[in-house]
Image 1 (tube, rainbow, N blue to C red):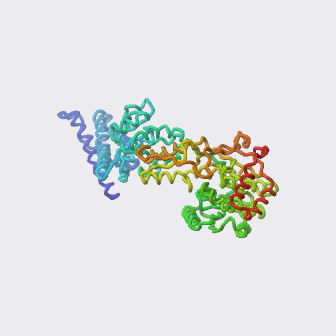
Image 2: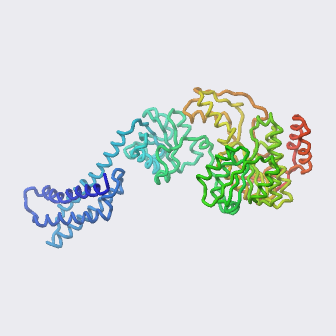
Image 3: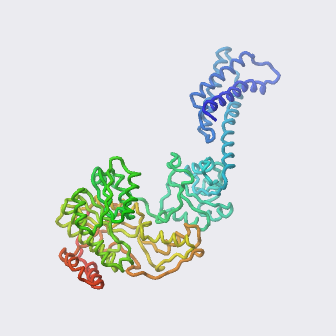
Length: 607
């Protein structure tokens, strides 16, 4: 229906209701008696008609979308009717010093019922029409009968794109039990989810509690995992109310939602001072961590961001992504280069003069580096040495190296090369104007080489999921969280500190596998879990720093500072100078000897 036709239809409908209502009211009250004069009634009807249309225009009664009408729309009808009836009553009193109170009261009621009913009939018709066009619908249980749950239920019913039908609510509020919200009953609490799902044949469970902390999501998921219903989360009520998110965009519960970790709050002002309007170089920019650092850096509107990487495809992808979602005024420069190429790295730093370097380029796969120790040394040690010395030579303000928890007492080549790289950075920091630092953290969910993609692939193939050992544990962190903390640690860099990110509690890999199986809609016995044994170079348990190497106090929320003293630079240089003359066995032995020494501990002052 076009706008003009819509206005005309509502005006004609309301005119008929308003003109006839007062006569109908009079007939109801006085069907046989001529109590009031006919001219006064006719004049009252005309006054009602004129004042109603004026009030309707003022309150936009004709140009509202009544298919989604709610209490606020009903109130506008009440305001308009009250004004028109009040105006007619004043007219009656002015003409004959009398008001037809009972007639006008009944007229007011008829106006509310008839006009309001005509509008809400459109909503009922619209909802029934939407239900009829859905080809296939799924029954949904909404966790949370608060404002967010109500908004979600409304959108499910009103959206033509939604294939979800709200069947029931669950809420832990005892005052809401057995009550109806939008004709949907609160059937129980979170503990009742399994039996409610079975009783009402629920297909989807949607968690609609935006204020819910991640530490509480796991307890809800434990109940949901006892069912075969798919579980989704409504991220925020604002996203739905502003139209940024539709029902079909409710995201499924992810493994990071079950880690019980809250988002880290950054010191935005300090980071902005280092990044805004400056030139930032990110090595390994095409990798999981490097690309996310680029995304986070772009939020601070740098003058220029240099995307350095060895693989052209990964650099092309992050380059295109940043250009599509980029900030106006930020120059994006993709650079294909190998950190092992000292001449190329020095030229890049000399030409572009970056203010901050985030060094994320590295070989990180533990078993693979056990088979290729020389490549690990060349990339992780020589590559870091080249970039760090270029930063020192050309006066880069800040240099932040991405390290790993595997650098602690390293039993494997990858961890040993990263600890060696840390020592290079620490030694350079002693006499450099560049502020150096290294940042250690554990496994990153979703990164290349992470167990998560492997588990998902194995589940998609029908299983089994392979886990090395039932007792193996790891620290986990999401890619965005790790990247944000890297930016924050960079602000604190000064004299070669090793910053350690608080990774929370370690997680058993087998428990992680079970959660991913359940998130995929299966039980453990349907997919199966096979234990394959520890791979070359792997630890059973990871550690970020031992008690003697870390200040217990955090210098910033979720960031500790280490106290490990490095070997002298001549020891490191001797290893580098002679590495090509060593066989693989000798290379590994010398590497482990340097990186596993019982280091003397020196305090580094907290900032």
